[in-house]
Length: 429
Picture 1: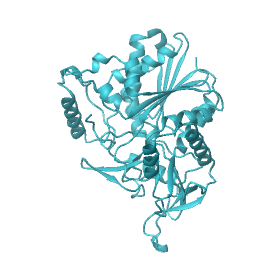
Picture 2: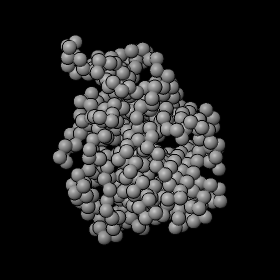
Picture 3: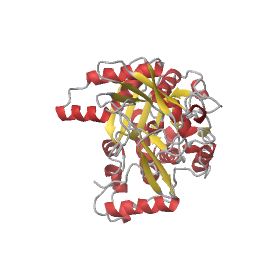
Picture 4: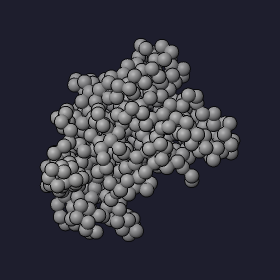
């Protein structure tokens, strides 16, 4: 199947480091964990990739008329035209498939939520606000009794995106009574300062891939894992570029993620010899360059966010969607990110994440089985989780006729084939 490359499908979310990890002095002459290096590379207010003047996320002025497109090639050409016109790196699925994508999310929520109970929705990283608008529009049109008891909060750290979300959702004054934007760090948000036992829906769309990860390494399967720290460049000490430094694992989030990943690996059925060999090849190569060594990327910032959510909103339904695999990743290690920069419409992939800070997007595939495991770990109790490919989710909840082209090709089902949904619940009704 012909798809736009992952470099053409960029995601947008800003999630700053928690206050006790962050610093106002930058990274010069310091060693920091890999996640903090990546966090500053992406989200630093002065030089972070996502705080550049031009936003990587785009908005389409009008919905795509899929019934007027002849087929797959016409769809791809239509998208390429808008990418070139808007000069952006990423159009979200909610944007491309407006309003149908948001309506499908609304449908899935109403199937699980009792109609006459208050519906509290929190979206982390609302982008342009398109998803929030389409969800609220759908609730108002198709489930008015549910809409009357709905509150919708968007958490967004970027002042520009927070303003864009408010403008998008409140443009015609339809949702002023139920919608608000909080310009806050998702992990440090005041929303999590008090415990609320009321049912709540948490939405994480294209969020997990840009949450900073940590990297661990070991020399062989019989040796201990080491956590990776980054030593910033210091020309006065003869260090012209940042470099990785190995230390014994001591960080609590790394310990927790590593234990969860290893537990999950033991629970998985044995793979074929070929798959086992491919896993080993993809995870090989390390700071020492030994072909027998292994490296692993861990979603530590994701676990931190899940811990905050589960403590403050123990009775929740979590809806997350993201990339479950990425093509053409040049970095070694299982779960390694794709690192790419876009200049004047031309995208360059990099073989290292230690590029000059703020010059490249760094985004990760999501291991959805590990996500479910981490959700269970963060909740410290029973959780129910369902993992579905995006196609399966949309077949259950979307109006497929609305996105079908003349040839029968349906991009809502067939594009973004490397994405999945996770629906996880705790004590949600």
